[in-house]
Image (cartoon, rainbow over all chains, first blue to last red):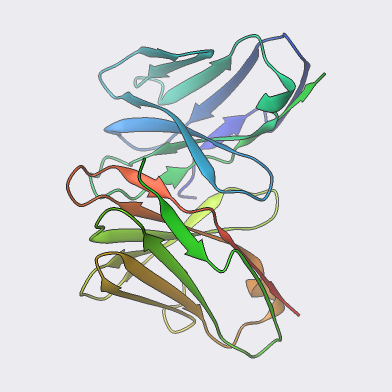
Length: 112
Length: 115
């Protein structure tokens, strides 16, 4: 399969709690990105982390990258009901063409 | 910010007909666009890379005669699903790579339902 794996596949938490999603990939990369997708909608770019970076923050989002383990995690702190969506990681598979390989995704439900 | 528009956003057609989906970069030029397919509750699968002025590059397992891609200008790529069947029903999403910066922007997707 060209795609990596994400876990958990589904996550349900209460508002205010933190949500952690993990992503593993198979090839070398230049960067890894996280996207969000509301049901039936397009993708929203959340954050990009380069292969020489280990951690990056953006608002309530924290992304880590471990290239030795070929894995990344996305942490959403103080979750809100509006964070309910599917979250996907995507890698460039080491190319600079713009082609992205997506993970399987995690469906997050935040209960009010 | 840069905007990529897909049209139509949803379409219903009869089995055997062909459907064209447009992906248009509204305020930037894109020499490369990408087409993805997403089945319900699944991830995005890359179908093909659309190159302006040349033939598209298809991923393994994607039938190029079934999914015709035309990238006739720096702002428009089209995907035509020929002789559509119910199993072609899916969400089709495009992305466009900005020529100058290399940034990627995604369209809102087009939902195809084949009856």
